[in-house]
Image (tube, rainbow, N blue to C red; front, side, top):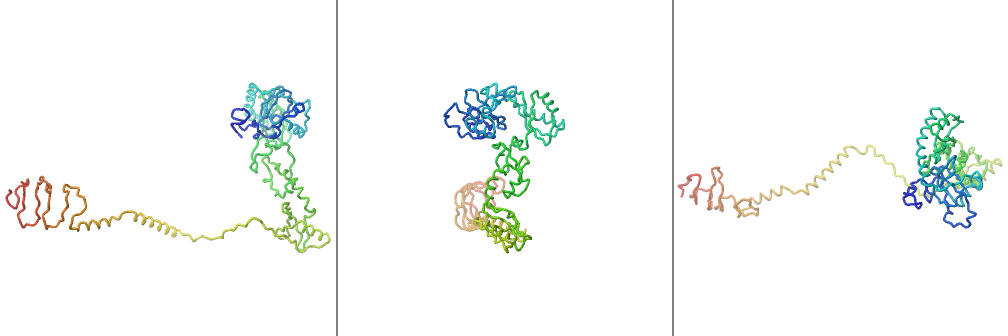
Length: 467
């Protein structure tokens, strides 16, 4: 869960370690639905507390001989082997008695260990130091077992809180002589060694994982007891005998095959017995499946792959006729009508060869032409502006075009019908110097003398002497 504001008072919550007050993230957890109810009689209250170790992978019962009341998620220091151990309270109250009865443990057994005290800071510090050694010890123990060539697999190492005892969990197919291995562990780790063999299912429970259903494994969350599972359970449930689909992460058949087996067995009691074969005129019909949800029995005929669904009443009727030595002419299979609307499948269209590269090129060319015509429509037409300018030049009157030169008045046309006014000096075309002209300039015809109001820097004029 990893919540940061749970009600246990721990900093940053339980961090998904199974120590929150709700116990929702604790492994092999039992919900205490009597937790908030008041206690009627303290004297008759259960004095046994369930304590979990290593994040719920192992749980044991301890007597609460102290006068303190423990809540779920509290750390307690309990009796160990030649020392003490530390765990979390996972269950208290009346539900512990139900768990004791389920496990077959006596509540008043003198061999049951006791709770010493609530864990203090020194106990917690020693506990964390011991737990930090487990990973290195597991790697070194696997290397030692490989060196001795032992056919075993070490899955987990659990150290006691005080570091005086180490429990090594392993799986093996045959009997293992690990006397030399125990001496190696004792000399190297300086602890009391206990070798505990577990099954392949217990190993999967300790490792954990996600099942094919998308949820966490049942053996690592709530399943305590492992019952034998065989393929008969799959046959009763009309499942295909596929070892890959029926096996869990442990390599054995899934434990969930037994969950609904009782329901299937109760439903199959309504079906007739000894109805595996039926005698017909076309041959012997064989039973292939029983549908407990629709109360139908499916049969097949020889040399035919078609399945015939028959009702229970029809099967019993055919059985009575077969006992009399009469073979039925037809099975009279019923027609199944599905309530789900049938989806209309789209028609198949063969488009191979209908689309060519030439067609795609034509489409691209057409698209480019459309884009080009669209851009030309938005761009101003320069030819129209040129035509307007030519019309303005041929116009005999003044134009509205501004003049950027010194002459601010209207510009006359180029015909020689009249004098051309000039209000300022006009530079000469030759590079000898500026030419001053203060008066109107006559036309270019040679009908009369050309007046000149000022001296010219170019020398005497050809028309006559200068004034």
